[in-house]
Length: 541
Image (cartoon, rainbow, N blue to C red; front, side):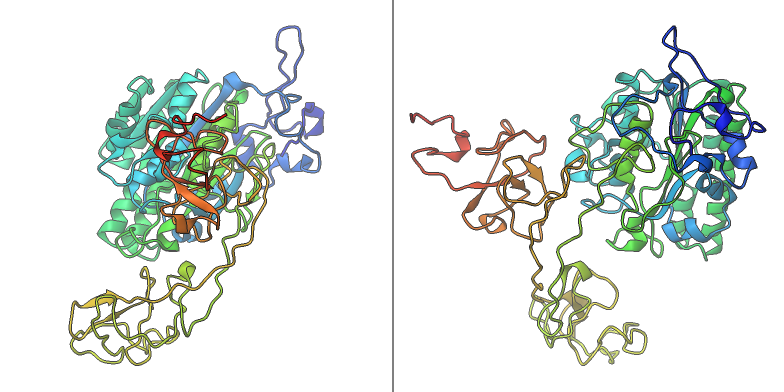
């Protein structure tokens, strides 16, 4: 890709490019940008020719872009399982791959269930469900006013025109319009993907919206009716149909009469994957999704994303706003800009390593699938049924079907990625979870560069409020949250319960707009006689 402000002479002249544009008398040059059609006509993207050059450092303004001619097409595919997106014959998905950075191991949001409500809202806001407040499909109107959608930011802060065409009506009726009914300049709710895409295509051909949001529902419907698996005939047919419709939108972009003067950003991702005919469990089938950021902009990279940093649908908000010239970072975001060469991502932190001891405990990050001990009763005290027995419960979790899961005797095991070790019972419900101790984890302090949301910072020398996450694996340092009890905090610290009306935290800097509790230093009673008053009662000298 083009890596710096450059003249057309850097490239073969046989292809059309956006020319040099002067702004008033300042003669500021735009970075040279190939047209969308030129990227599709050539197997080798001509932007590749200058990958060796370096872009200006992130945050500098030495290379200007035609912000008035930047357009965004967001392609949201509900229930698009990552493996299916990667392996199926989807020529228009491959078309997007050739124009940008792609990942088939991107993650969904991590703090909510893998349902559409939390997923779509996290895409739109760039934050986890613990912040935006939507934790199901029926409560999209609960979206927190503290976390605007990228559509609202594009409209209000950047002055862009915004349109949305969807199949799942709650996206508009219960989320976007509830947040702000003035956000959308044009909206459409259709009953099929074909009619939804047809409306969006008309906008691309005949209107001049800066941001167009689309929602394809065919894959999700096929998955629920059959199987979220590319080998399933119905799901495969649905994915191919969605790909064809996406191709029609890309063709419409290429055929715009003004295309030679425009930079387009295409972002494709999903709210969740799927397993069987559902998508609720916390496993890779449900939580791994495709993420593609494609563009004719020289700022966007090319090729497969790093396996160590495969991205997340939380990256949608910052990526789009960055492309449109918005100011980042926004400290509250949980995502980062994805696929851009002028933005340096901070790799996600490695989780604490489990100290495995299969004979006595199970690792939390494996849902105790590694446990090989001899506990044979459930949490409720019921006796486990032998795995090689079909009495009193007939089942398929046999040693023959799961030869590597340690299904011995009637010991508690987890052969099928449940939330923990379990067993069938002989004197109680069909099956129950067992009370297996969790193996300890290594809890070394990790000092990493400050990211957009600072969610990876774990250290003891900071007074800055930091959101580490829910159910922390390691005891928290000072000013870190979320804690439930003092046991969640390091020695010498207590869990301070914040009040909704005052989110300041004694001894910590900053105010995070999240009603979490944080670990703070123990304080003398003569300094704070009542923590609930947030030191308002202090009368010392």
